[in-house]
Each structure stands twice: as structure tokens, then as C-alpha cells.
Length: 144
Image 1 (cartoon, rainbow, N blue to C red):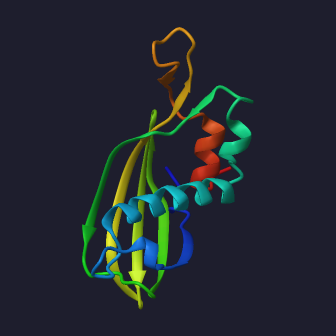
Image 2 (spheres, rainbow, N blue to C red):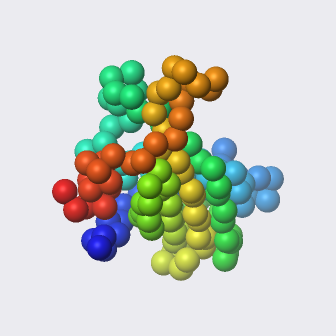
Image 3 (tube, rainbow, N blue to C red):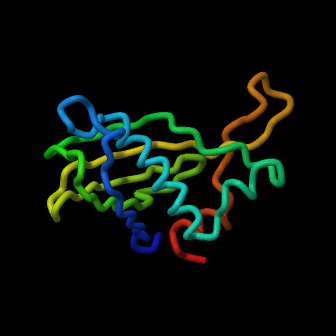
């Protein structure tokens, strides 16, 4: 049985470059934030992507599916809180969840499905999917 999800919170000021001409945060910017929040969450668990590339067989956790449900706008000048956690790790799949709060109200729900990959020189792409190693799984779920 997995432990309760370990949530990671990132606070971010929305800048002009994040927004469309109506000064509403442009939807792809949320997905960029989700990637940043995922990396921060991994770091908080002691998993540093920059130290894994080239030093282990780790080849990344590419996103194979992503979605968002928008509840209210986020605008230029707002300060948002982004809560991120792992919903599930099953085999080679990691499901991330993100909630964006603006002024204490839920503005957006996001979901990413990632696949753990390792270097595979024999494959055409140079990598292949693989089960999430138990040590990483335990760190991410807080069950060390």
C-alpha cells in the first residue's frame, strides 16, 4: 500500500510574458509550469535529473499524455500556488497531478502521464521504457 501523496507546492508570480493579449495566462505556460513543478518535486525527493543523465542509465520521463481542466482565469500580476503530487506509479508509468490556486480558489487541474525510460543503444531511438526502480519509487512516494 502506498503512503499518502507527498505534495510539493510552488508559488509563482505571473508575468507579462506568460500571458496572451488579453493578459490571461496562455494555456501552454501551465504545462511548462507542470514540468518545472515535477522537476522540483523530484529534487525534493533527492532525485536530481541533472545528476542522473550520463551517470546512470536514466533517459528521462517523457510525457505521453497531458490534460488540464480550467476553472477560472489566471492573469498578469496574479500570484499562484501550484500543488503537485504523484497520483500513481505503476510499472513504468508515473501519473502526476497538479492543482493551480489563484487567490485561494482552484483555477486549474492538470494531469501528466509520464513513462520512465532508460538508455538502450540497441534501439533506434536510443532509449526504451522500463519499470520505475524501487528506490526511486520509494523516494517519490515518501516510503523510503
